[in-house]
Image (cartoon, rainbow over all chains, first blue to last red; front, side, top):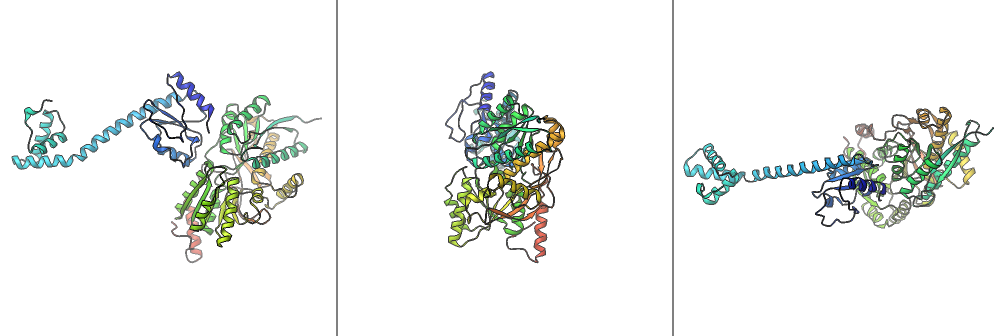
Length: 183
Length: 393
């Protein structure tokens, strides 16, 4: 069910902000859309049993328009992780705030995702670091603490990460030549 | 001396997908208007302005916009579906008018510019599920129309049932108006669930109940069927055999005893024929007009703020029993009832609440622990846990 009144407010207000608007039926599969910055979704127009969530779960932030505040509808909506929302009927005020909040939320999410990826990478390479520490301990008869400190200080000097250097130690069988790094 | 006339908007879909209910509601509204106009108890008359949005959601907005701007209407009685009500709310809020809403709905709304005369979810689905858990089954197969009423009603059902240790065996949804029901009926017959909860509406529901009845007769199965929307005119449309035996929750049945209701039904039948039937939504529409008329009389004006104040807590002995508006949420105190459909397009009431129940549109008073405790107590009373109660905590 298309809500023409809401659509015209969205068009007019986004037009004032210098944005262009493309309409699409949420129940239809959405093709590639590289140029889309934000999706405004009329949540009331979609069956909560339909499977549109994967298409909308992409990295584009979603602003959800809510008319029905039943828990069943809101639960469905949360699955979409909307970056922002507005209550219908829309007014000219509010869309701009929703947009700013949505972009901010999307920015934070992508920063958090990058941060988490980095942490996960560290966890994954713990085994590699441990193996490198062991190798230096055996080769140079160092304590665990000294071996790790050596790797850490060398990594700093080489301007690389402990994980990266550890991988090199394992690949080369020992500490890489200082001259081989030109960081 | 002629009485002053107050314009009244009546917005019902006499055509379109739920025309049957729209016509029933409009007939009841006009009957109430005639009674008010002929009564010496009221020193004004209503001039009804009829609008038929034809079940088209956008047309509700247009109709109300016209009634308010062109006919200077302060009060509108109408709407049936939640989608239509959501179209009307912005305009009545913007122009400070009142919508008197007769139909039950799924809750989670409270506009200052709507008087919700139909049942809230604590009046309908909650008593029905409680009864089901206590005396019918703890596992249930759900079939319904794919829209907000079913989604939300099934959510409440699921919350209560699972907290009592029961299971939702399936949730099968059909698009509104869909009548291809055979695959669902076949699944029910194959799986033999201990209960079926039906939130289908309109033709889908009638076709489903007929098909399930025929399949049950063929296979000699008897599966309890539950509903919180079935009404007398629908029993007639479903047919004499297939409509019998459905456990139904509603604030109104034609068979309610008491002088008010007997007189109301007699007036209805005198007006619309002895073979016609009053429906819950029809009766509720009548109550809307009467609550409004009494509030106007009490306020001494049709002014919206004055009428809203006058309607608050003002008890009306309606056909369905005492009804009054709770000013906390603009919904009505109503008496929940449970009944079983019997031959002759009637319901036999087997339970009703001791007193009108406070409306709880957000189900904030829903006490799952109390429902579970009652089940425990019942299980203890019979000495052993009934078979259908597996785990009750």
